Length: 142
Ligand SMILES: [Fe+2]
Image 1 (tube, rainbow, N blue to C red):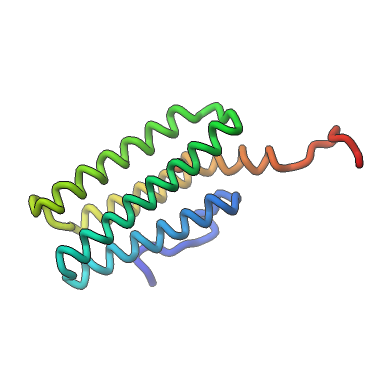
Image 2 (image 1 turned 60 degrees about the vertical axis):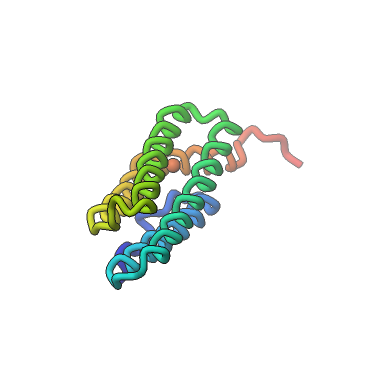
């Protein structure tokens, strides 16, 4: 059993977002495994960077979808993204400067954040996007 297992309960039922989330699960598991195995500072540093870069791209991806579809909750959603990004970047800087190590609490925090965010914030977005893609009854017949 992995540190965080992907399951259908984490699906937002929108394929592109689910694919990103699966990759995030993989990256968090990778970071956890490095922490557990007492990996070198530079191995952890590059894993944190990979996670940060991927999250940045993923958040941008979701925010673009929200803007393009005039999603009503774009602002509170983006605030959550910005808050986590700031925390992760601050951690990365302090870790790189060897002011802090990678603790179990940090990895647990990331896991909890991702699961809570998916269930409470991304799921309504997935429902919104899926609804927009469904043909409506009064769509012109071809
Ligand atoms: Fe999100």
